[in-house]
Image (cartoon, rainbow, N blue to C red; front, side):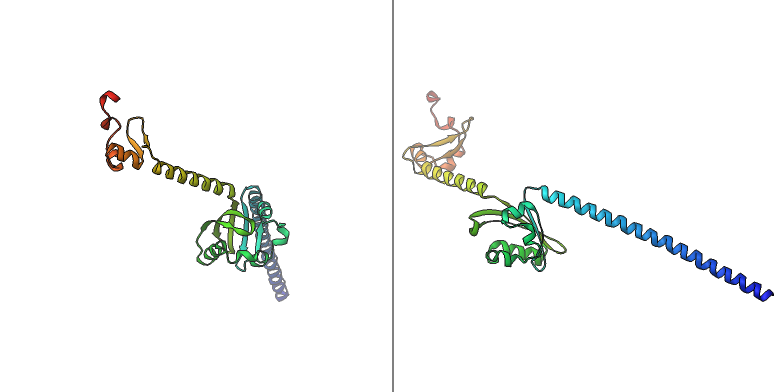
Length: 219
């Protein structure tokens, strides 16, 4: 009958609509899954590359979450911290290194964590009798810390300062006049004894040259 024919047509149309809709949903779903797979692949590739970089740098690198748990430790950091990375991951900084909690390093870490501002510190770490430089950066998860042993550099700078201080004391306390003079005759540095000898203050000498206060026959 006409009614049955009409019913069949409507049924076919309904089935066709469901089929087309299902096919469209499948295509959209497949496209979404493909995009997610690509995004996951891209993230994994970026993560691998980041790990390669962190493992290749000469600085120690660690990251801590807001509960002060280690979330990453590169090999250089593991060597300097004298612990395998696997033994530190997931552990709390203060539990593994109790002595650091009262150290200036920790106060800087807290500042970076709470104020979200990068920090830098160089300080002596008594438990290991070493000097370390720390550069601390806030992250969405907590903080990232790059650190290096600067003991040799620091000791060299201290020795240079001590040598300079000894030289300055010897220079100023010498019983003879001593001066540093530039090639053009400008006075660069004079001690008190020289000022007494020539009768000029150090400021007055800096306004003159060696030639200005020396008899022409002596030049």
